[in-house]
Image (cartoon, rainbow, N blue to C red; front, side, top):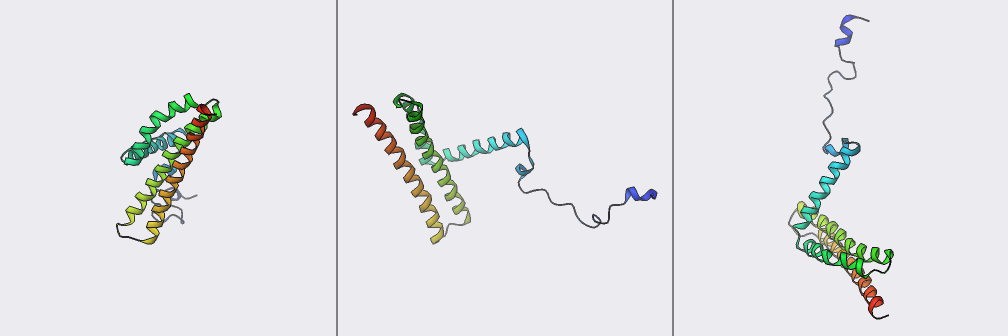
Length: 146
């Protein structure tokens, strides 16, 4: 092997720039480092959600309803249904806010598809609220009137 061979790039790499770094550094993270950063993004999402009035109202209601679920539920299944329905409302609200935020990023002009996306997100929140209310009404009825 010639002496200069170790200092010359392989033919496949000559003249080609290095690939750009990924747009999202999270994709290259592994193990606990990835989990830690993902947790940070989740906390940032909760903080962003807190800026939304509807999410803030639901979170405050959850501060009352989650302990009430422990008191009202007669079994772990009932408690899980009561608490889970409250948390589900908050999850759906965060997803709806994400949809609205992404649509608003595209532009402020009215578009039928943007309206449909926002309306469907709102409908999802409504259905989660109706589900939650139905579960709580039935649990209260079972506890006090049955």
